[in-house]
Image (cartoon, rainbow, N blue to C red; front, side):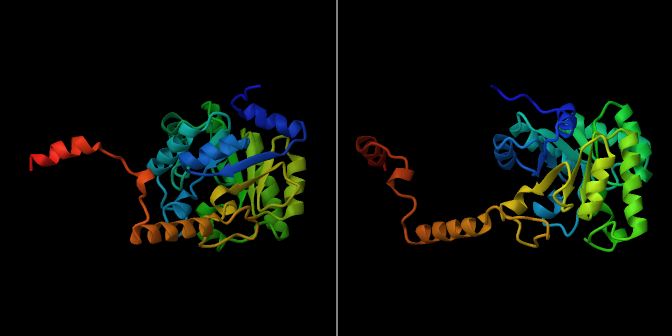
Length: 281
């Protein structure tokens, strides 16, 4: 049976059926093609592209133009997975009008199926306005990289009473505003489990324990392709950076020793044609 394109309604149904949601973060055509062939439920084109693909120290410099570019690349590859595009820093925080406009732009020009934005109950009015404009929204609470300076670094959130209560209130406020899925990043496992049970919508985790409604991992982390640092919550399923480095070294060696390209990698001309051409010189 041919698979059908996954929709936000299908994601909601997975929670109701008690099925885990599998989401991957990636930013380019070849990786998105593989993720789609692996039948993941959803692909997030994250603003982490700035760090993973462009070498930035954080996500703040990423622009709408860059997000649209990478969303387009992913959408060209994907037939089935639900694709979510990240709204970058300052594309929605400035006003409700900007939030609606840029969310619509990411869908119109990036082609994505839904958008994601960071922040808790303070951003509920933006979320409601975007949803009212007909755009599906994914929320994101806990460790929110766009506010990393305010949070004091990349660390677990919700570890004291006040912070834990705020995360619960944020989740409920975003659900009331109309999100169809919540992302919780670096939230303690038992708190994340409680939030999942409080919500009718699915809440997936990034470093938030086993008992969420699903998991998200960066494809470049799980393949061992991003070597600058590895978060505690990442499980590496391969070490492709080592394999790629060895392949590059072997290629260099073959070129330097005159082994590559071989006859099987070259194009040939018939002797009589070559002789006819050369005789004129």
